[in-house]
Length: 544
Figure 1 (spheres, rainbow, N blue to C red):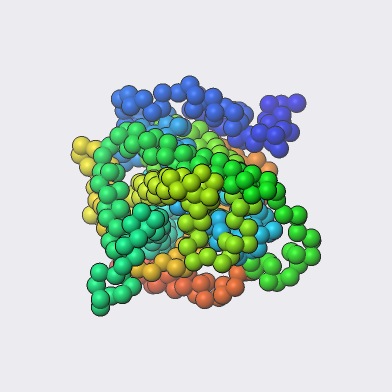
Figure 2 (spheres, one colour):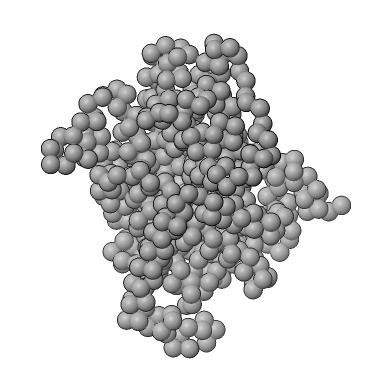
């Protein structure tokens, strides 16, 4: 049995990383596993802060630290950015974005949507979708390691001088809505937990604007503080991220320990009996499960954050796939453990609360006393801040990448001469996010998920299949196992979230409105610049 066949045979045991090629072994089929990634995290000095040269091509025309695809096509060009991020920092940035305030608030909301017995299935289904979609991101991220992530993928998949120019513009257009809203939602969640310490934050300082509270100003201030902290070189950001990550792990550990302790003090730990098969058959149950899975899926998102920073990643053909898969596995395990700990304590009471996020702090208070409730609330505030930190770090590279290609405002293409970061894009995103902190974000999570599924995830999942068919000889440092099952399963899972939800048509219409407006804007711009579909045949054909 060959090494590759052996990897496939034991896929179910430890998830192989397909065939990972390095520059030294390009053209050979090599095997790699998650365990290889763990060993690399232990032994590398990726976060040592030692000087590293920016990614450049040598005079002979051979790429340095890059696979053949990116050397020839320019897909790996990092522009003015330096490749300083290693595997440990890559996993860290992913996990910081994944574990925000979302899971702490979503725990009772998932129960309210799906019911106590079906809620565990929502988290399990969300994890399965994340793993399947993560394999798509891993293959594309290793093949096209450029700043901007999905922006670069869509241009390469559908053609930079063809529909890819339109779809990549459309992606940046929707990011202009969804990224600041995602950042703002994290900041508002942070301010919601600060109410535990300062109840007066719920007051409205302006009588003419009763919907605006002190908490909105606190959220905006948090957004601006994150912008200021990110305004430094990537090595300093990585060191700061490790400090934030320590608080994130402490928050999760505190919730898990509190959940088991509370259960032990109230009659022992137990889980409800598994629901009968008939529970999955009704339309109402499927709708509740779809809404609950949508919330859980949002809590898993962030495993792809490193793809937006790909222009700053060392050895991206190896680092990106391993970082994605390791972060999904680590966070899935933590979420499952947290659910096992707190679900018996939450029970059906979670369906009848107006402040769902504070239930987690109440569990700690019941188990260990008032001090524990305040401690958990403080750690969750820390976790929310950490998530916004990683989220803004990654998304600030998207407008920069588009601007460098001439597909967005040129002003945002600048790189700071000292820190080596896209500072204008970073500041612009922070300011817009602070502005959105004054909006009501009751349905933001749902709109974010649906918009990104339609205008980003579906396009990538279809695209990875098209690439396999249309460009079979394309160098792929990472090949997803069990192809084409991962993209097909991810599309089926996301389709379930869209179809079976209550009020799905209304939210699909909002996403369609973003798509139509972005398309009209692109067509006006393309007509003026003579780009696809208005370009001449010779200009549109990259071979001529």
